[in-house]
Length: 91
Image 1 (cartoon, rainbow, N blue to C red):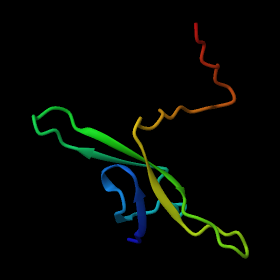
Image 2 (cartoon, rainbow, N blue to C red):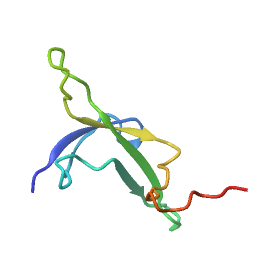
Image 3 (cartoon, rainbow, N blue to C red):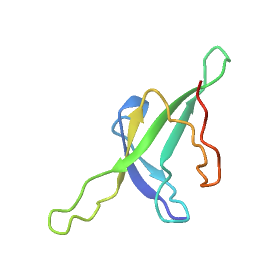
């Protein structure tokens, strides 16, 4: 299996480079969730990281890879958006 060394910025993994397995498209997942167990036996705390571009080359403007940035509020829930679905009605 192929792994890609990816830098983590912020949060408990700040400055670490960890191997992340890319998906079928060759890119790492958009979100990386890190569960940290509770010392009192409660539910684990989940730290979320969002994938962002690491930078671009000067000459051609090609992307250099990915980094994960810490998002303290967690990630937004993913909903499917089909053309035939009704829009969410908010009161």
